[in-house]
Amino acid sequence: MRDIFKGKSKTWFVVGGLLLLMSITLVGHVQAAVLTDEEVYWLTYMREEEKLARDVYLYLYKLYPSSRIFYNISLSEQKHMDAIKTLIDKYGIDDPAAGNEEGVFDDGFLGDLYKILTDAGSGSLVEALKVGVFIEMTDIDDLGAGIALTDRKDIEKVYSNLLQGSLNHWDAFCSNLTKRGVACEPYELSPEP
Image 1: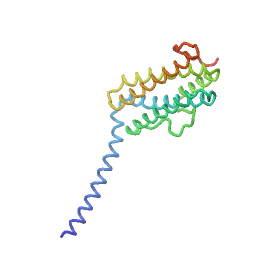
Image 2: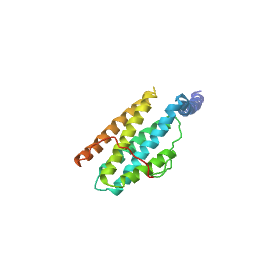
Image 3: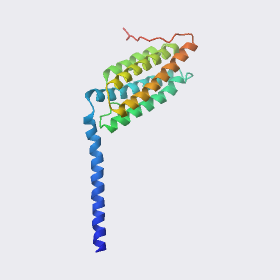
Image 4: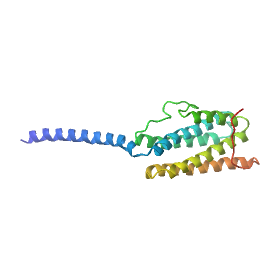
């Protein structure tokens, strides 16, 4: 009798484990449905916007290797990308940055902006630092908009952490400009004629 019970308990254990695994998998797919269109938009947009920052900073670091600010902040931008990717995975959203190499974006606007920013930053180290100010000010504005459009605590927490990081990055770029006698002001970029 004991052997029969052992056999059945093993079967129930396996069946229970499979049901638990299936429910965990289904929860990930159901969670995407609880997000609003705006939340999905901002998650995918911020994923690529953080990639834009990382890619531009890597490009500028290659031009100005003695200015480690671009390399150091590119590492931080990678962490920002990873934080957004965690949310994208959690909610079962397609990753717009998946498989895209440096400077390549699903969002055409961000692809154009990458070209404008790398061209603008190629003029001089001061112009490159101004590009950094522009990127961080844009991130700060966009993260604020993303926070305002969600009531999901996990998304709000990630955006708030990224916002603090962008404020720190903005401060670092402004500090570098000030050391060079250049005011840290809102930087307007215009596309090449």
